[in-house]
Length: 156
Image (cartoon, rainbow, N blue to C red; front, top):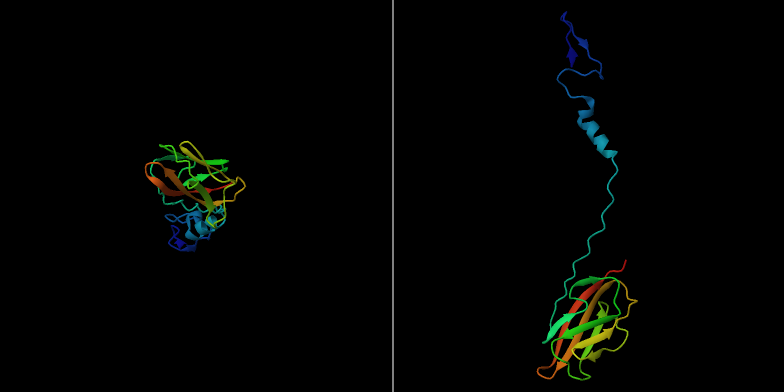
């Protein structure tokens, strides 16, 4: 674009001289692209863990568990305890097992019955992953019934 002096002759305008009504060089589209290209990029975020989604099946008389269904835990507790509202039958048919998703045993000892609880000692040296709990609880009124749930271990 040219600048017209008052005498009517046109003279070229130097490239770095602003022309009235035009944008300054910093507002030019190319200069914005160069400015954005020099900005540091934000670090990539760690992908969110897949939500835990274990199906739960509760046996009759089941009240609670020391590790709840779909919990993500760290560290691993020494024991897993299931509590019922009725005293369990003193039977060797009641049991509680915990296995990792690759079917490795996550218990450190056989389960035991203490009145209204079914208890198992857990292996505390486990690795990250999903763990499945399966139990059979025997009662005088309804016989033996099974239940299941799961949890995730996410160590620091």
